[in-house]
Length: 77
Image (cartoon, rainbow, N blue to C red; front, side, top):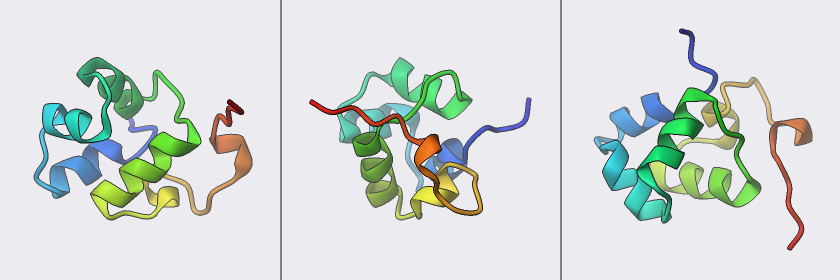
């Protein structure tokens, strides 16, 4: 199955386990797995946090040549 995004690749390159990264971002391991597999969309904060921790640009994590608003589920709270 082709990867929808590059989170898993970036995580492995950073030397982090899924459990360790999930703990750093305050997310359940299963939720991170669902993000990596493309079963769940990012919200803007998750994408920013993953980008910062993994030291990768957001467009790289999304596996897109550039970031578009349609790629992020924005929530106003």
